[in-house]
Length: 233
Ligand code: 3SL
Image (tube, rainbow, N blue to C red; front, side):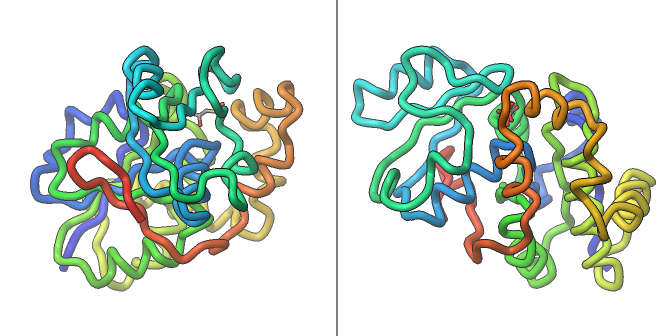
């Protein structure tokens, strides 16, 4: 039986051997939700960067630059980190350079994996189907917040573990914990997350609608994957 594990923070990545695994990088609020949205709306590619300067430099190469630190759009960047900035014709056919506080850091730390795909509630079923049919053991890497664990990424991990429980065995206790949490929360995820640290942070920035959208399941069918450091649908 294939296995599934959950890395609750990128700071714990050193504990996992990823060379032979499929890694699912996830930052529900909001980086990976934005990436899925942008690629679903026709963006040609997204190049993730850990460093802001490197990302901003891509402007000179014709890229749209997207950047956020502590939830706020960074000066000089074309776009911030709201999924609503990546809909309709706003990004169609464009190459995007993207840097965020946690999401792109988690992707950076996952680069040694056999393959890296991007997960969010917006493309949950596509992720589940792909992992089910794939040959590799799985590691879900939660972006968390500055090295700390967060609830929303853990809930997503739990949703995946729950849906694959008859096919992929847990590698340790983190997938079990995530699954139990998800089962507690699944009937009212927004309510369950109301007191969570990042929801409070987003509320202070007046972006509640991003939160609601990022929790909506299966808006899109795409599955972004990292190819030579670039995310494509
Ligand atoms: O940390 C990240 O990658 C962001 O998604 C955080 S925020 O939602 O833009 O604050």
